[in-house]
Image (cartoon, rainbow, N blue to C red; front, side, top):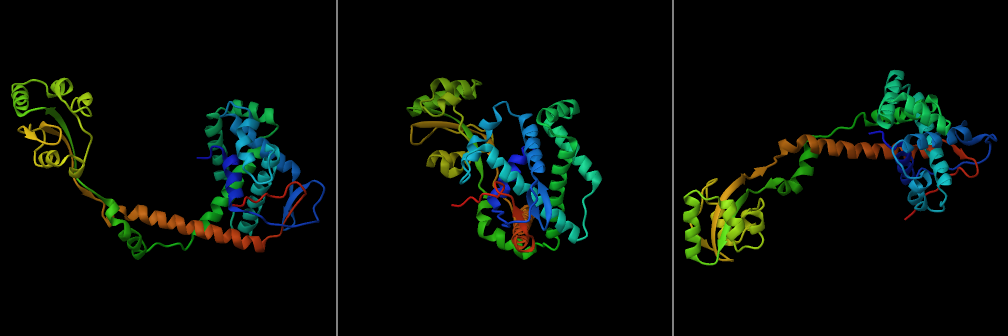
Length: 334
């Protein structure tokens, strides 16, 4: 679930359009600040290095090649390092806003949960092998503190998500209004699968029926003697089809027979048929009650997304964000 966090996280933030302008007042070491709290250039580089350490544990291609396609899609950004730097800043800014917002609301993240998050990342990326993790971290110049920083950032957003979801309700009327226009999509007609032998004339079909009645294998006969080019290679077997998907006479016969009973010879589009019904999937209808929970969850998630978007829009006004030259986010348009 946490795999490729830096790549997915920064791209998601990019697409969300987090463009919070500011200017002046930054120290030489600062990449950005949020209401005066600075995010250092070193923090940015360490976040990028952590992403490299995590993702490189799963890919064998060169890091720059891996990001070349992603970076070239960003307006005004063609160099992977520049792209990563801007998006790492964007991610760190969003995390700092969440941290300050939680403090304003009197909320905090659980340190035990942070420790568990670290262990989950180590399991996901290094299969629980801490020695392998330490070797990779040493290669990229990062530490467990950098890992903890990213985990805390995720937990800040998780806590904010829980906070803004408070009060989201989904009523029976909401669910019904969503279900009724699409109710027909949840009605599944009966389907049957048959095995058939198609012959050129009635006499041949009757002779084949006698052979099957005497114990010969219909599967072998269908493969060797059926003149239907579509089903003969499948030993006469069709897929699971509705009545309307069969030729008219075949559908009428197939849906009148009980399971595993051989039909009498009858004529249809290709010639004379013998069929046996081998699978029956009865008609089913997923009622409102049967889909209630999944519809309620879909509506809840939509409303949660709307609330998070509103939270982000309001924070554009609430928080003053400044960026050092070269660290400003690039906004994708179109």
